[in-house]
Length: 374
Ligand SMILES: NC(=O)C1=CN([C@@H]2O[C@H](COP(=O)(O)OP(=O)(O)OC[C@H]3O[C@@H](n4cnc5c(N)ncnc54)[C@H](O)[C@@H]3O)[C@@H](O)[C@H]2O)C=CC1
Ligand SMILES: O=C(CO)COP(=O)(O)O
Image 1 (cartoon, rainbow, N blue to C red):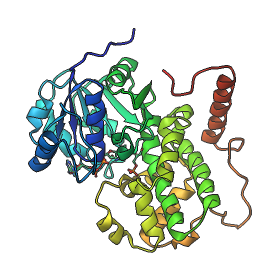
Image 2 (cartoon, rainbow, N blue to C red; image 1 turned 180 degrees about the horizontal axis):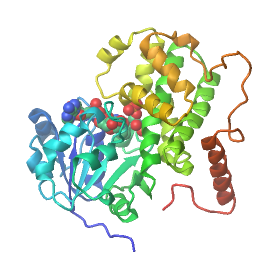
Image 3 (cartoon, rainbow, N blue to C red; image 1 turned 90 degrees about the vertical axis):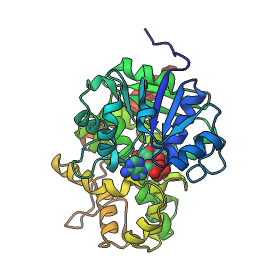
Image 4 (cartoon, rainbow, N blue to C red; image 1 turned 45 degrees about the vertical axis):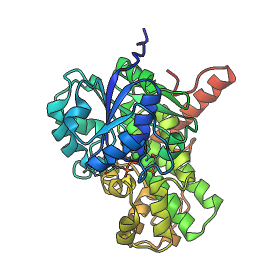
């Protein structure tokens, strides 16, 4: 049986950047009683009293009823669901600070799209490692969710993923409003890796955009990028369907197409010839892809997964590959043409992806639901 939404359910959102603030708006508009935690007291005051977050969401009026505080204890007091949206590299330290104030039965939801650089762990894995809680109470949300578009109430969708369907449904019921539709799945690995990996492909797209290459190059990278994403995620136990859904293909399209994407923007600056040091200085907001390249390539190596596009992004970041030389494929050592590992090719993930597409098309032909459907 599906859980009912309890109006006024107490929830907390940790992190008052662009996504945390937007997500707090979604939850408030959906009827929850939301307390947003901002590190800086002056930002908490601007949000509560001025109903603005001018640095991160310029021009957006925040809903009446959304309150913010710089005190973690107040933010977490009585919160039944806790949504976390801080930079991935700071998650562990923030969880340690939050732990004493967490309700014993709270659900913990990651809104983040990075991996921890020092361990290669996904965000839900870091949560499970730091907090003494049942993994069934941990969830992740991902999808084509550019914060500023959603803050303007432009409609979109996302996936709430938890090993417990009941947990995913309870969260999806609350994080659901006129302009934000949530689906559920139980593939946490695929959902989280979709968000991490599309960032890296978006950096590659930004690079070729910065160089001045056109749509053929970008379409090739997006297509080959999806194959890399799927191969990688499937090797780690993801369902290929997830990569063909909102948290994979959906987010890949949004992030690769939009100048709002920070990963895309960082790539564009690299393609225009700025060094990684300059780019890092210029980026005012969290750019998860830059920190994920190294750990993702190490994880890929451990499973023997080939990721030529991500490898080339690493080389551009390291200054060992000129941005204009980035290509949607690498030649073999012998220089001989390679067979295209595509939907009918040899790679495990790619074959699985084709199976997914075929099932989805068959379902659509017969009026079925999409792969993200509950
Ligand atoms: N902005 C977007 O469109 C979306 C972002 N995300 C993900 O959400 C996560 C957060 O990103 P954004 O809100 O976009 O970043 P942001 O750069 O807009 O905001 C980050 C917030 O975290 C705070 N912060 C920085 N260092 C911190 C630390 N050590 N401890 C606690 N807080 C710290 C900043 O002051 C800021 O309030 C990322 O993993 C990102 O990939 C996911 C979907 C959409
Ligand atoms: O995840 C996002 C959109 O779904 C936001 O992408 P960026 O972090 O590149 O801005």
